[in-house]
Each structure stands twice: as C-alpha cells, then as structure tokens.
Length: 276
Image (cartoon, rainbow, N blue to C red):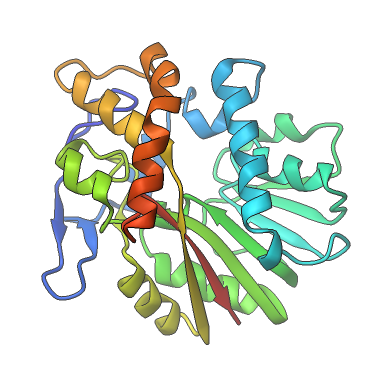
C-alpha cells in the first residue's frame, strides 16, 4: 500500500486475520517510524478558514450531536486523545463544556488552543502513557487505529477514568461496504498511518482484553470515506497531499451510498462506547 492521501514515499503491507477479521500492518511499524508519517499539512491538523477546516468543524458538530447521549455532563472532565486542531473539543466548548483536555503527538498544534479554555498537552502515547486524569469520559475520533499497541492505550484510558466513566471512539469498519467496493484504495486503510483496522466483533474483543465491561457499537453515516476512497482510486498512480477539489465537490453525491451501507449494517465507520 502507498500513501494515497498525503503522498509520503512510504509503502506498507496489510494482512487480515482469517479468524477475527482484524486488518493490520504486517510487520507492525515501530513507534519511531510511525511518528514520522504525519506531514505538516496532515488533514486533521488543519485549523484555518479553508473549506477543509470548515468541513471538519461541521463534522465535529454532527458527531457531538450523534454522541450526545454518551457524553458526560458539561461540568465534568473530558479528554480527547488525538485531538488534532481541536474541532471536536471546540464543538463541546460551544455546548458549554468547561473542563476540556486534549492530547496529540504534535507540539505545534498547541498554538491552535491559545485563547481557549481547552488544556492541551503534546504526548506520543506510543512512547508514553501519561494521559493524566481522572476523567468522566475520553474520546478518540479516528485515533485508536493509529497506535502501535491499541490495547495498551485502552488499558491506560481505563485506569484514567473515574468510576462509571467511558471511552467514546469513532473508527473505520473493516467490514464496510465501501471497503468491499474500493479494496486497497479504501480510505479506512489510510496507509501508512493506520496500524490496525477493526470490525464490531474484534473491537469488542479488544475492549474486553483492555478491561472494559461493556461495548456499544453504533453505525455511522460516513460519506467522507466514500469520497476519499474515490480520490485514492483516481490518483493511485500519482498520489499528492491534501483533499482534491473534486472530492469536496462530490461529497454530497456520496451521502446516499453512506446511508445505504449504514442501513445494510455495513457502515464505513462506527461509534464505539466502552463502559468502565
């Protein structure tokens, strides 16, 4: 697999477990190598008034609404791991949340939080599991699939939660219809940055191994997966960084496909709620 979305000169291999269906990089990357796979223009780090930046803000607001029943009360402590430029945390801030924390691996992102109530720390959780706490809830928004050892990170989250706390995550679904359609060009593989891609069953296995007592999985309508997969297919011979203009223009056209696959039980991504 090449880096279709950012054009880095890196190739990796994926394999699928014949038993549980987990899709994983083989061999797994080292933590030091993985840290070099995030360019300065990495899409989740965008924090400006560009179309991509505005779309990320809209997406975050929709996710907050979709997850509202799983979120803590506004006055309780909330951590987002892999917060990027903080679109999800800012959406919570607009809803009156006052105890917000963010962690990501890039120190430069801290500038995006200047003048806000959001407290940011740069921590590479593949190198250190110092996430602080205790928290009423921890969110990972397309993040769990980025770690060399997701189980170790989830165990650290379990220990950082208050009694009755929960982890709320969004992650690609390896069993999705879009994966079946686009194959190696499916955006959920996101080579070389995704190390493991889950389905509902093996995500439940992971949650159990990490010490969580209950997992709720909710399918997610995700047209962005379709438009980015289509972009990967189009530019497979000449990958370049960033989101192409035609991907943004075609995003509304992919909504019916995303709705159809969710109704079929094979959504491109899924919400997972892990109860301590």
